[in-house]
Image: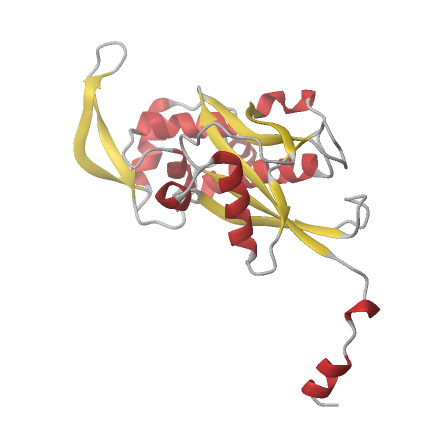
Length: 250
């Protein structure tokens, strides 16, 4: 049987129906705390539970396009601001009973960016909000989203060790102190200011000087801080290890 004969004889009804969705673990930093975007479901299943923004993939779009569309619908982002959001595929989740409606496989994505706007609940949601990661334990989560969130947070914390993606939480120009604030917020550990500054500037291509400084000095009247931008490095070598892992290696 050649390909044309096979396609003519192919009957999709002979196979069980499977749907594909995308879910987005969207992270940002607000008021010095790591926040996650969640929506409260307005319809079954899991009506009233909090869930990651997501939905079914359209027949004419790929997975990344579906994830960006879902993120745009919940945040109102578009154009250049949406393109500035870092988006990467996280993992696939396909347990047979993860959704009571039918066999649904979710391809989760991780997204983060600075200054993401207040969300607006879509047509199938009662509410949408940026919630502090530290408050998630008090929320009822839908589907297997607790596992997806845990995996997303672990990925984000790990990637800050060996990639320059911490800079994507910041404006295009930033100080080393602001960069340290990202690491402390995402990792949940205070870092020694001097050691961090030395490590950042010793990693080739991590950051580069803009030649400019902040308009004002520090809160205690110190000198103005130098401004940096993201460099061209794709990986950090040597890596910036989390305090707990650094102690383990020693």
